Length: 296
Image (tube, rainbow, N blue to C red; front, top):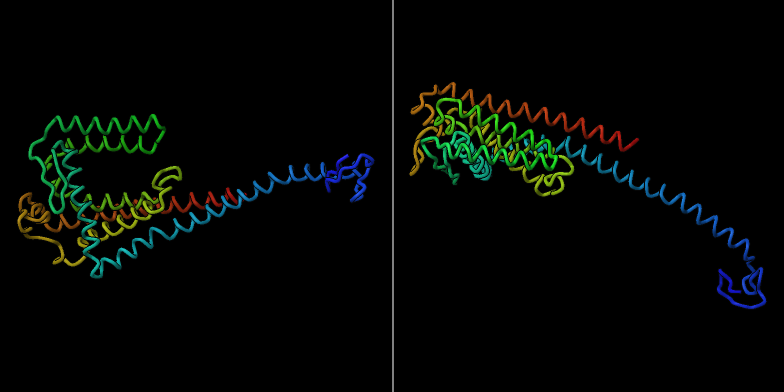
């Protein structure tokens, strides 16, 4: 018989090994008991390791949510006070022109966002209205099929916004106002994207998540500081080779009082900050509850 321990094989060894001396029955019983213990302990060890990893991830996410948004706004404030302000200005310009274009599309006008200028149509086209409505509806339908309820709500909000914008008079002034207004709102949305769900592409992509936060903070503060800072920093006048600046268009062409114009931008920025504060608090609470769940 072959020994299960030392592999020595001899015809005369039937109960114990002639080389290493083990008793075959006792050795087999000990091996079976060890396998049973490993089978019981193995899943427990794996579960404990997985639980510890989950708790570590939850704690790290809580720290990120507590620090990221305030730090991004503080660093953006510092950048906007230095020579790097031009970088923030270029980022804000992209959102600024996007704000013009989105508003024009919602009012039923064609628009092409470019750097420093967004050409757009003067007359409403119901073909564009129908196209924008169809695009929003299709996006909402796809989100509904994928059970992305947050995007379904966003699509419904976009349709409601389109209806409101179409019913308002003075579309030209709206398109002009929502240049800087759009830059602040879009900047706030980019910052809020930091709190996207775990299953989203934004959360899973570390560079995208933090990059959107930085771009949003720099763009938002660059515009917000213009309207809350010294009056002489507001860009009244004419843009060479383009037209009057947005503030001059709103005051000289559309007759908005300067004080009312400034207050509207400041109030809009404050509303964006209030919304970010609410999202920040919600993010902290949800992350803290996740830490508690993982600990238990």
